[in-house]
Length: 129
Image 1 (tube, rainbow, N blue to C red):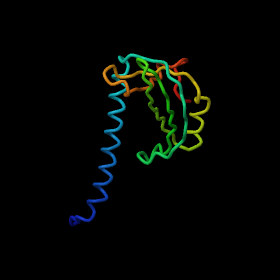
Image 2 (cartoon, rainbow, N blue to C red):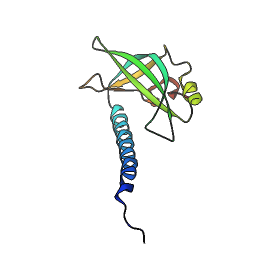
Image 3 (cartoon, one colour):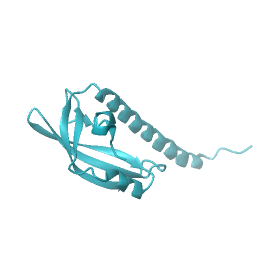
Image 4 (spheres, rainbow, N blue to C red):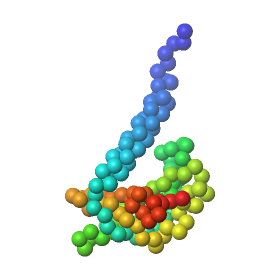
């Protein structure tokens, strides 16, 4: 029988913490997307596209990020949409052709700066490759 060593706990606790943080982020994204289906929509434009490393996930270590702007009641807002990828090359491929493209943006009715891009709203049902 192995004796309990408290020095082994911190690395395990770190792994559990990362797992819980990732799960919380995924739950928030799911919650926001789920509610976004009932939010009003506005036309937006993709103004930026970049690839960045994604330290949150060892399985999908790269992210393709789209930055967009939209107007609600004469006020300008911006948001971003992140698509995860297994490699930098795949992340770059997901961004091809998006800059300058028009998109449908869903925004929260009570807080217009909270927004989401839904795949089902986009022409052709596409959001990234």
